[in-house]
Length: 122
Image (tube, rainbow, N blue to C red; front, side):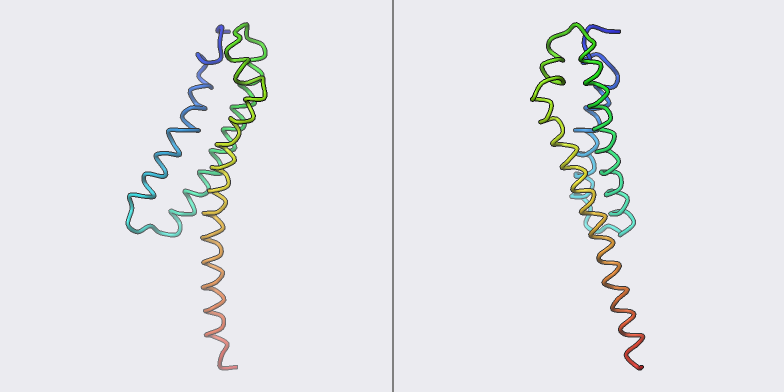
């Protein structure tokens, strides 16, 4: 085992899933002029899954930091400061749930309108 969790592959996965991939997703969403509902749904699901991976990685890094002799990783992962690290997954998960909800609500509204149009004759 290395002396610090900052040299672990899981730490760099956490950086990728917490910073790099969400920024890439937001850039793609902002750069596109039009986007299909399945793509929006896929982005929402990806954000929720990324939030789950972030929480898992934070938990494993916390246990690794507890076992390592380094004090720097203990200060980040085993103190009250670690609560701040959970803000990003909460935000990404919340945005992902909002995207999924948006697609489902739009679909339901259109399905209700179709139903009303088809049953106005009765």
